[in-house]
Image (tube, one colour):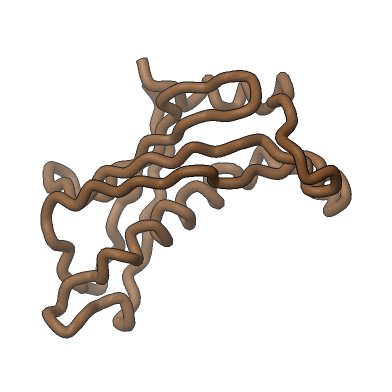
Amino acid sequence: MHRYTYPCPLRWADADAYGHVNNALYLRFMEEARTRMFQEVLPADDAVRRRHAFVVSRAEVEYRVPLEYREAPVDVCVSVAQRKGVWFDLSYEIRDGDVLYARGTTTIVAYNLDTGRPRRLTGDELAFLDRYAES
């Protein structure tokens, strides 16, 4: 399995009063990693991009260990758990080496923003997802 790994920087404002990264920000970390991962498959043209968009239909986070604020980034690892004709599930791990801070999943729907309806994944999108598929 090939995973996409994004070294996500932490910001001082991410910390709560206890010095831990606020739990709500884990979804933002997942979004940042997903956005960077998909940059290579998204069309450059804005009009085409609207017809080949992706939207999140479900998100879930399981918090494992508190992540304390620090200067060093945290790794957000992304892989494709499963895929169907119009949607796919991404799995995330927010971690440092052996320390797992959180696991998450998102269900992503291929979407046409112009019609306001789901669309089928293209051959190029399916090939891209297969590169990151879990075994």
